[in-house]
Length: 121
Image (cartoon, rainbow, N blue to C red; front, side, top):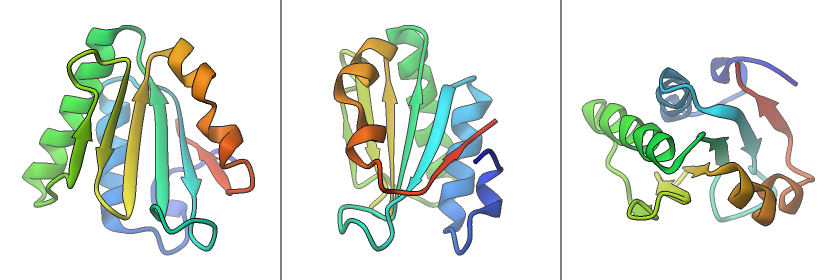
């Protein structure tokens, strides 16, 4: 399913803000997994890729900046030094920004394969 994050039923406002920040920095293959009712880890996983460690870092930094400006502080931020997989935790919404080979290795979309997914454009 391809849609805008604002079209996901009962999605929190931070989901739309986060996905807009990802796409503003040209994140690749961005997907939202709706984990509500499937996992207690988070309500949504947002998974995207960058073309290089610099691109992955720039995407993540843009997310953090936009979210902070809107009053959302990250509960956790992991992986910024190597920028192969950066995780940004906003409790209900967790962003994962990968280098493509790392994303392929961990296959989060497959791990959470029963979650409804939304491809972002």
